[in-house]
Length: 370
Image (cartoon, rainbow, N blue to C red; front, top):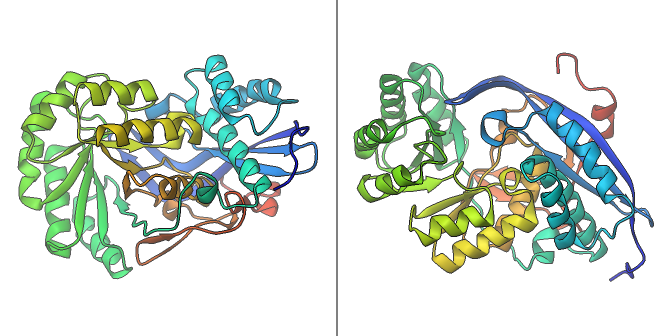
């Protein structure tokens, strides 16, 4: 292990990172045609580099690429000259300075962990105390023409995946038709999950969840508005389908409230919501103490952000579900190294740090149209 006591952060680069999607991506709360992300590169006084990625989604975190570019400039001033290994202290400092900008904070946090694991000459999951194990991801079918959903589901299963997540929440009949056609196309064995992204009120949610019961749904993510914990708890008590908190869970304090009041059985942890790995670890520990099974999810990250999330999953056995498919929607893959997915299994690299870096030529000359 290298001597690092005197090292400080001497350079911080902030770069827009826009990747066109293969097609329009629709969820109940917004539509996307490109991943408008942001990269952060931290450099220490002895030349060690760490990379982080922010993937803002305005309807979930209240951030956009433009917002995060402005916030990143403030965080750069805050972190320059500081010890890159004081991750806990820097996480708290960033949270005090920009308490509501979790996504851009997660990018800086990710880069700090990349540096720390590189100093330790360990892959990030080992640095965090984890070990290799099987991680199986779902693939998402977004809101669109219900008539096309069955064929898309068959394509996913032929590619070796065994878990499908279906976005719902815009139109009741379209949702019911979409899920029905998917289940008819793939049979009863593959697992199905649904995600409403806060689309329903109490009455509509309970009605929809009961209508989906015949399709053996593994769980439903965030059926009602994030702040309505009473309805979330009511649905958990009365729905035939287990409920997972997503938009209701940003901070360790949120996790404590959800656990204390026994609101839901499942938590969805995302680095972009929590503010990064440091805070996500605290949420995972609360979940473990309360016996809450967790999923690791994401926004629209490239394989850089997805790889960091996969390392986090390996370090936390409480993570039983994975939703790490975001880069499959990207038209380009401008990342060297990082995770690969084979037959639905997420393969995590063993190189020091995160093990993924952006393609500098892509950053210098992104394709036209992004």
